[in-house]
Amino acid sequence: MEGHVEASTAWLLTSAALVLLMTPGLAFFYGGMVRAKSVLNMLMMCFGAMGLVGVLWVVYGYSTAYGTDVAGLVGNPFDHLGLSGLMTPEGDPTAGTVDVAFQAMFAIITTALIAGAVADRMRFGSWLLFAGLWVTLVYFPVAHWVWGDGGWIDELGALDFAGGTAVHVNAGAAALGLVLVLGKRVGWPSEPMKPHNLPFVMLGAGLLWFGWFGFNAGSAYAADGVAGIAFVNTVTATCAAMLAWLLAERLRDGRATSLGAASGVVAGLVAITPACAYVDTWGALVVGAVAGALCALAVGLKYRLGFDDSLDVVGVHLVGGLVGTVLLGFVATSSVVGEDGSDGLFYGGGAGLLGVQVLSVVAVMAYSALVAAVLGLLVKVLTGGRVSHDAEISGIDEAEHAESAYDFAGARGGRAASVGTGASTVVARRLEESTS
Image (cartoon, rainbow, N blue to C red; front, side, top):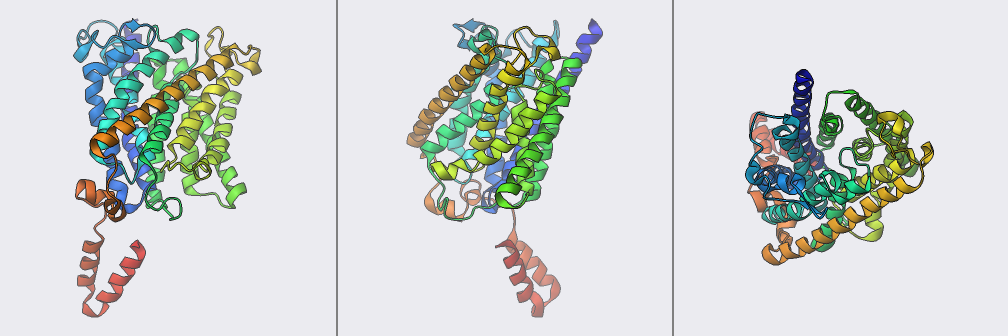
């Protein structure tokens, strides 16, 4: 028994570190998708979420999510204020300090996901204020609803193994509420706003995929067969989603792109998150393929509906989370982990599970979007919310952080000096053309 606890502790600590790596991976994924003048701000928004949410989590966040239930809506924030009663080596660590560490990473990345929707235009201080309020009023309570002892969604019997509802639908809905309040970027959608560094995007997607094994398999809370099932299904669905996205691109646009491959990977990871321990191989393939195709189509909705979700948080995370969570009502099977009442329609179950899954995502989506919109309005009143028109045109990196990611002027000067006076003008012109 002691050896089992030690193995589970080691696996959960490793998984926590993997999930933490996902946020820097997300920073690169998002950072490559923005324009060169915005990349540092995008990185800072993700890293800023790490610092802020990490502090709030240990002060009152963990207790709000996992403290003694209050009416099925929230945990008692005073149960473990400042982690009181938890900072001890005795007892089962997977239910104490190790659990605190593991779940902290979920709170961090869920908040950071929202940042991609408001890229290029939200002030850094405004973002931190919004993030702190949102994680307090939305993420901590919703985590209790879904995973807390006595949470109302958990009591309904809804399935969410690793965060399709609590993480992805939650963040995607918040992104939608916030962008509707914050408004569109200057020049959108008439001006092209292409990713400035696709290798960054691919690197970020790779880091996310790597860290996601801690996200999904770590949610088994043990180094056991359930973790293995979650791991294999995460691979399976993600591969299927990437191929489905590329096929959709090929049919729609005539080309399969690196951005599409990276986005398909993330869409698959999102969709399999709630389902990874509740489906068999065929279910994982269905979840991945459907998510890849639907998310590829959904990212274009912002142009039809007129909301400026800069980096497609709504199209990938909200839609992907909805797909994975709702499809459990069809493809979940108790033959995988043996939980009673976890058979979907395709495996002999009734419509009850499907109804519970739909209710859970609709409730989380409505609550998160509404509160995010209200908080967005509050932040606009208190801080202005977004940078000035001129700052947005010249670049949010310089305006907010007095830095730039790429020293083009220095590079031109250095190259010109090294080749002599006669060639300096030509070199400078070529460098300017390559970076324009």
